[in-house]
Image (tube, rainbow, N blue to C red; front, side):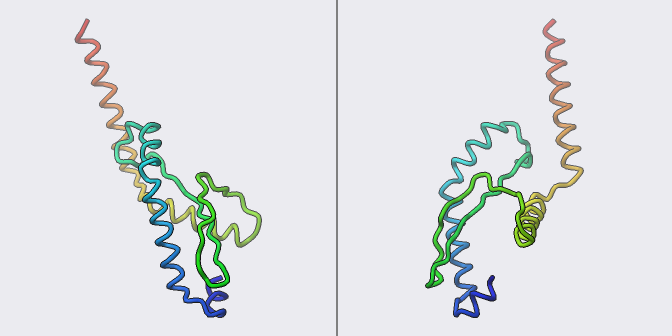
Amino acid sequence: FMQILASKGCDVPGLMAEVEEMIVKTVVAVQPTLAHVYHSCQPHDMPNQMSFEVLGFDILIDHRFKPWLIEVNHSPSFSVDSPLDRHVKFHVLRDALALLNIKPENRRKYQASLKAQLASRLMRGRRKN
């Protein structure tokens, strides 16, 4: 797609910079709302690694190569209808999971922390009797 745009005279790096700026500004605008919803659902999320969100940005590029934000999908579909769709969505999910930097030791630390909290609550309950 980028090669097609370039062949039609588009400044692809400039276009991508505009798209990135559009996405950053949109995320900055909705971040407080997303954070509130997240923390109300996961108040005890130790290092903020219990969940993440993938947003789908629909962007139209007009005949002058100007990007226009059409909508942001809070829950984009990951069903695939074509080989291109499969390629794009596979890479989106792979990159999102790579960003999480999930390590087995994080899970062990979190489970140990929960176990210690539970033991502490149980011991407090026994001391009162």
